[in-house]
Image (cartoon, rainbow, N blue to C red):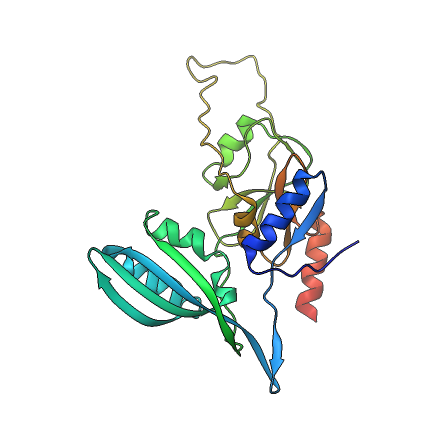
Length: 252
């Protein structure tokens, strides 16, 4: 069964899903979407007032980040060493903005937003730039495989974790998705080099909250929520089926 759930923002939906998870439910969550209305024959979407307080050296980065997401700067004031910025931005533009904002301002930005009104649709808003790394087959992730693939992306899993085909295991450093073998073990031979064994240095995995996962996923992705795990995956797990579906979309 599937349900369409309405909430006041990602945090509101996140609280509901987290409560259900703790009560023992298992569910799959798709990408959140804003509620679109038709007003006087025009397609309209919700707009919000976004307030950001940030150190002056990061103000230009914040303005660039918000304007790329169709936001408009209305107020810019200096308050001591901080810059006070007020924008009007479509609610769609806020999805995933908090993480990017904190990354670009070294965690210094303080942002808050509130619903303003419905206004005409603003057009396409750029989503996530980078693709993802996907597990090729089910099994247990090995330190050897993760170590070999660390230059391809930042991982969401640790060695020893069970994965399945189609699961999102890392963020790719480039646009586009990549299917990888994450369960490959080190080949055993009778040849050894002094000091070369066991020198595997794994970067700690990226820990993402449920709300961050909801902001991160794209249209063809979803979140698997269980009492024990929160994992991101492709909606269509099988690689061949995904390719067929994408070809079908292109021909339509």
